[in-house]
Image (cartoon, rainbow, N blue to C red; front, side, top):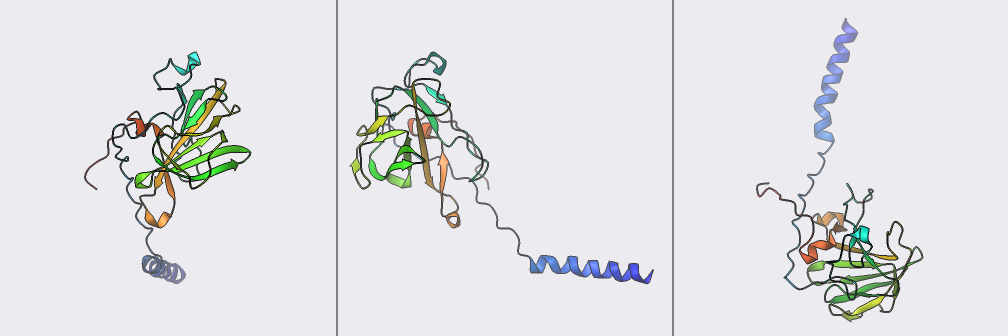
Amino acid sequence: MKCRLLAAVALAVVLAVIPAVVPAAPARAAPAPPPVVPVGAFGWPLAGVDGRGAPASAGSPGAVTRLFDPPPHYYGRGHRGADVGGRPGVAVIAAGDGVVVFAGPVAGRGVVSVEHAGGLRTTYEPVAVTVAPGAAVRRGDALGALEPGHRGCPVAACLHWGLRRPSADPSAGALDYLDPLLLLGLGRVRLLPTDP
């Protein structure tokens, strides 16, 4: 009986001390609202494509063949962009004005990243790259040519088009993934509460 009483007292002391010793987990920042993009500031990332083609099943260039599927956490599974159907060799163009911050191979595929106003960054792959880092580009300027071989592409070639912006949590020091179709006013809209 005495042992049980001592064990219960010891447990009570430990449980009382733990909250004082172990700091509470930091509150997770609320997701940032979608970026505010001026109408007409961005366009489709493939030359000659306006995105209003037939459904992807018809294999038309410009059709979105795979939508953005955000990962549950930074390293989680998902689809961090939108795939746009095209033809091998078609010009991959800057979706908006900016500066090329990366142009080169990643895992054997050509990738271009362009930094835009407000910290937005678009990425394009697989591309036969024709620009260099530091180059200023305007909307519609060629970044390279679309290459075939994008895994899961139902047409001759698909461009993986991505969009990122600085994280809402500055301590994360990372860029958050967004749906690039938001740049065209076509992304999935999600209503968020105005009250924290």
